[in-house]
Length: 285
Image 1 (cartoon, rainbow, N blue to C red):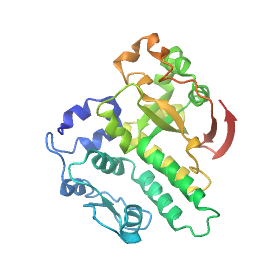
Image 2: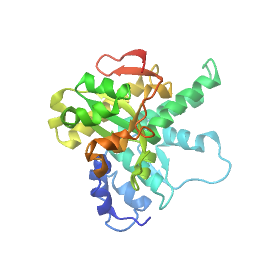
Image 3: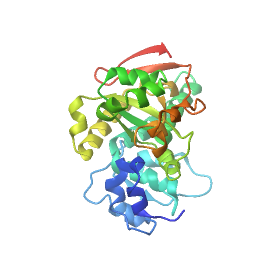
């Protein structure tokens, strides 16, 4: 697909990335130098201490320190393929949610180097959960606990249709995963994100978008900084993205939500997050 900056800026799905996208050339895929120029006067660093930089990937058999996650953590170098949409969106998410991305990278690095872990499968589960958030994550900011419970319990019609106005005023969805952004270039029924729910005050929704994003970046980084969290994929709640009000012209009628192949009732154990006091409680939907 040809690079067209303005088409991305016209899609509500890319709203969190608007500020970064707006700094790109209109019809030319950004180079590594141009992406690195966006870091100028930005104090973005990884948790290993190095400043962030986008670099060309290395080929062949690599030493541990040169592999993707270790290299990022140890040197701040994010391997980025030329003219690759997946890697471009990864870079744009780094520019938008730098603390959260650095926290994910740190979780991967620690899982890879944690020789004290009881079983390698535990390290694998942690990496799976963090990869799912990194690739397909959606940050769900909510002020109404009732609406959040509807999402956790797969009550899609009540959430997105019957309480549509409340969702508009008391809930926001922000795509985080760079793999999900790649899919958003050609949205399709079945497109699903994995939501990390963050409780906010109602006044949050009146803040400028840049303040909303900075706040959520801090909150996600705080969540990931605690090793007891993001240890399994069930901590993330499925979100059928094209059901979100205004995210598809087709969802303006109630029959849209009759598609149970997309808006599934769901039966699984989930882990409930309270971002205010970091307490969790498991329950069945």
